[in-house]
Image (cartoon, rainbow, N blue to C red):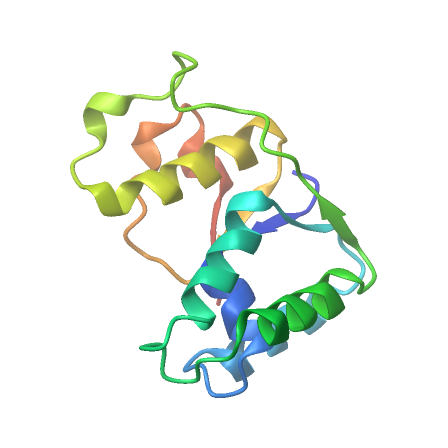
Length: 142
């Protein structure tokens, strides 16, 4: 595997100093300084949507979140992954999707697997069996 696709929560943890996993995310990220890491449209949009929501504990205006995200993406090793897969392409076991909360995780898992990168996440409940080879690309951030 060549690099990591960070999920929404991992990116939020990196840019929000009040996030419960902020220090953990930075410790892990620092150990991967030489590796390629990725974001994609769904991750970037998800970060802005979550952090700019008025109910988010450390809510910031969308332009501020976008600036933080832009600063993070300007760091060494970042490569943008375009949305290049679909849950409708026939390779995802959509019958294993049991809740709407699994859709984004499954999509990101599918994108990571198709690009042969690891999906870096704090989420321990991802249903890896929805994507062929999914168990090989889920990377729980220690």
